[in-house]
Length: 99
Image (cartoon, helix red, strand yellow):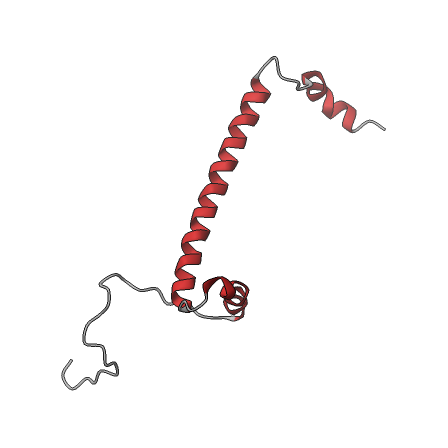
């Protein structure tokens, strides 16, 4: 763009990767305040990046754990030798509404 003025003194971009703008609203400010002591001297943008990565890892681990527990429940509930009271399950509808 001819005649456009750059307001930055940086002559090159530090990365070619796309950037993500994150608004520092009240919730984000509060979250940053909670963890700031664990990130002494670290820029807030780096803290947000690190927390996003840790959060994604935690969510993936939670999902893996849920899947593992679901598989264990399926195995237990379909094992004829498990401690599940199948007779109680068969009659729960009848006994649950009885007074």
